Length: 186
Image 1 (cartoon, helix red, strand yellow):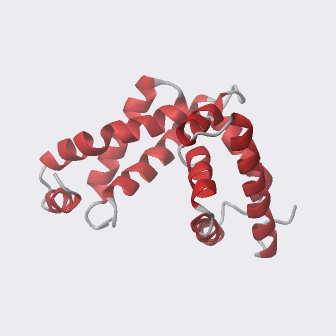
Image 2 (tube, rainbow, N blue to C red; image 1 turned 30 degrees about the horizontal axis):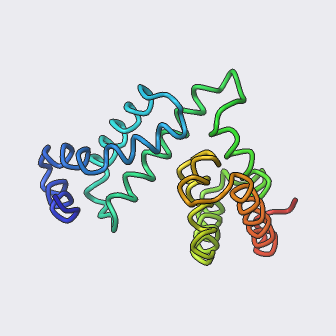
């Protein structure tokens, strides 16, 4: 079933929309959640929560891409679950590594402000769109999908060291841009 039809079903509050969404994007979202959580049961719960959130938000929302909408919601739920799961035992896991890597670019403080977060997000999206294709793919795989470097290397025919170098250089470029734009004062 195509996305337009699924959206129509969501707008008409037809429960079959959830089954169609799960059939079309469930495995994709499960992979995203598993990359963050490294736990199949928690990841499955995140996908179910994402389906419910889509049900509650469409309408009034009408996402341009259901796949990306589902992915973003799933990813956010998974990160929240990760934070809950590790609140007392900080450390470990791919998610912690990804957050630590990005912290060197984004820095701390002020990100609680909704306007600041929105502007920062737009700046980062523009930065990512402007990257050469290979750098963009590696960056998104690492920091959106939280894929480990060996998996990214295999996917793009690179060595793990190439992936680490690409990520390091890209983070440095991002940090330089964020300093220039006033988002980072490190």
